[in-house]
Image 1 (tube, rainbow over the protein chains, first blue to last red):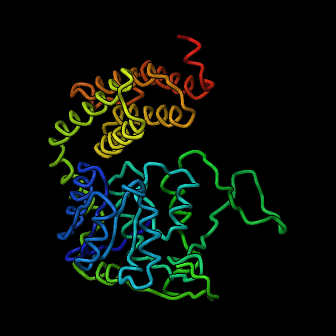
Image 2 (image 1 turned 90 degrees about the vertical axis):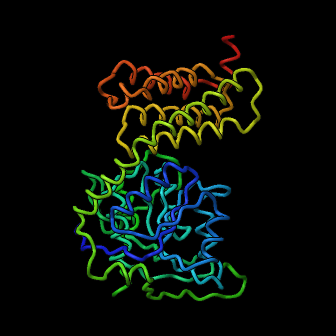
Image 3 (image 1 turned 60 degrees about the horizontal axis):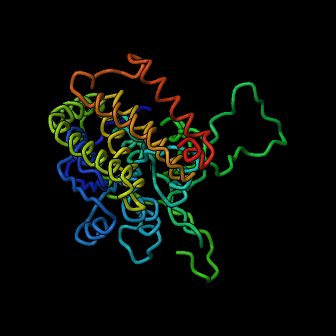
Length: 195
Length: 172
């Protein structure tokens, strides 16, 4: 992933995780990246209070944020038509990186999922991806959020693709945890917001 | 969002303030930013000791209550939460053995919760391993440096995973 320099100065970053130590770690990383305005909260209610109280530029949220989880929170933020933060970039941190979970996050309207444990390089690259690879938004009766259509980067080794083959779509079932690269592929839009 | 009225799909470009301002000149180059972040993490590492002690104590106390039959029904969920937090924070700090054991405990707790087992031995042996790996002298170890421990824990997870519900009562 080639990354231009990212300037986080004066951007308000809201970090939401139940674990005080985890938010401290994320806060530290962001400070290292040059961020000077990081807010920390521990639950969804505090996220809403923060969003009402000020302009927040990006939300970094744990998938298990109490009480109902980060995906439900994402759904609510995307779903409220009168919400000025409706298109805010949302990055979900997930300990559970099974494909079904990643797809649920994508379907809730998350811009990106980052697998825990989180390294500074992983966080920087995912933030940079959100900053420099904007996706168009889709507004339908059942979904509001970044365009979910994604590239199929390839097929498993030894399996060719015939003209009549169906597009690859894995059923929503539990499976092994995905590596961050596989997660990234699920969020690589066919079209970017700039085309 | 999902109103009952007919709703045509709309595709539109959005440039958020985050996307606009992140492009400003004056950003820190990636490698330097990552190096600075790593150093900022190193600054808060000393606080890990106190946090780890608290997490382990809370986990141990939950497990003790469960063993004594005094825990409420949500104990396993709370134990799983503490265990996940341990796994994630230890992993971020590159305490790989600690992270591995906590992750293995999460697997055990997931199965026990899902299948309604009562396999406390599998939990207590993970707890013992966590207490050991949490000590400063062992914290830097990687799972492959203690193969007997890691193999043993894997076997415990396998055993719990294939154990039919109710099998524990048969053994007692």
